[in-house]
Image (tube, rainbow, N blue to C red; front, side, top):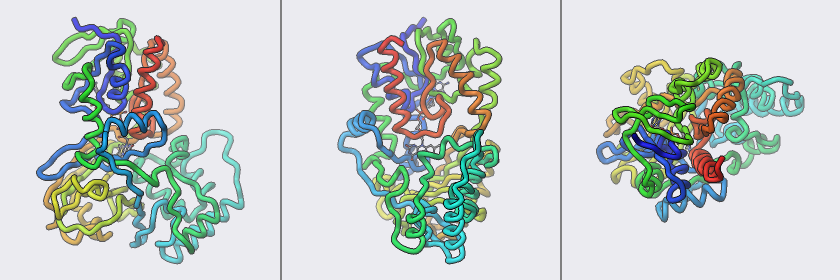
Length: 433
Ligand SMILES: Cc1cc2nc3c(=O)[nH]c(=O)nc-3n(C[C@H](O)[C@H](O)[C@H](O)COP(=O)(O)OP(=O)(O)OC[C@H]3O[C@@H](n4cnc5c(N)ncnc54)[C@H](O)[C@@H]3O)c2cc1C
């Protein structure tokens, strides 16, 4: 019978960071069901191309995690200034839309600027209870920006009614400009510095997976191909597929919270019910190897209904090493509410869209492709989530379980935050929590 002090479920960045912080200090076992580490921050090779699970760029903001990540990457890291854009009304304009309307037709510009100023001058207070995203965007950005970008783009991304989506996730991801920035961005100079990701880091070679690989290399307690099928938190036993029981004293979970709770034999009915109310979307990523492409941006957002995708990017503009000479690597993201996507018709619509916006001249330029599916991609922020999380986390705390990472904590977060939570979860156990 296998015994460990700390069992870590998952070898994505959160689980790897927790393992790295425990390494040499405390007994642990990190069980990763796949035959590779990294979770979503992985890179797959197909033919002569390296593809990530869509763009995975490092936005570093905290000293400890920046040091951890940059040290793991050694010299294999480039610092890059963002060139992100929006394609709407048959024109490109720089990101963020609300502060860079210069590329839009005059009528759209006027609607957006006047709507913003009207909303700004009205200064309507937020409602007392939770505010829906659809009301928030009209109150803060006005009708023009909301109708030309915020509402159609977010409807495509979240695949959930925007009148029931809450706004706790917005602060770090949706920058709110000042009136002078909106006016200057529409009629004067470009506003470059707005948003959380004006500068990002990316490995020079090997794609984003080289970060996880570098961390995983030094972890003696990481086991690949180990899937945890169920846990009994009271007894401290996990059932591992094709392996049997693993006894643990303390647990760090990084697998999706809803799946984890449904695998917990001793979860009370109220906790199960809370987990059952959690919702997420599904994202399909079509990676394309393209010959002779002429695209200089990093990524672009597509609010228009004529495009099936909400975002596309050019990975070779982060790192030339991802494709052979003369070729580029694109990623294209389509979200669904969980319903299956007909890949053949989606691919035809993607190629049509890429040609319409000028990223592709002809389908014959495509020399490689790889579809990747992210079943649980963006967790939905709704009232049910706000009510469910305290019920679930109170029970987990009583069982001395830490559930962390983008899906373990059920939040809209990014790679650095998963690393941060992994390091901090290990700290907590090292301090005998
Ligand atoms: C479309 C998209 C684009 C993104 N772009 C960016 C970006 O540009 N920059 C950024 O910083 N972040 C980005 N992110 C977020 C980023 O992917 C995550 O924040 C981060 O990779 C999550 O790491 P994690 O370890 O928390 O979770 P995961 O990567 O999901 O790792 C969890 C691991 O647990 C394993 N697992 C699950 N269940 C079990 C089980 N029962 N037994 C054993 N193992 C199990 C899984 O196989 C997986 O390896 C993006 C996310 C998406 C969906």
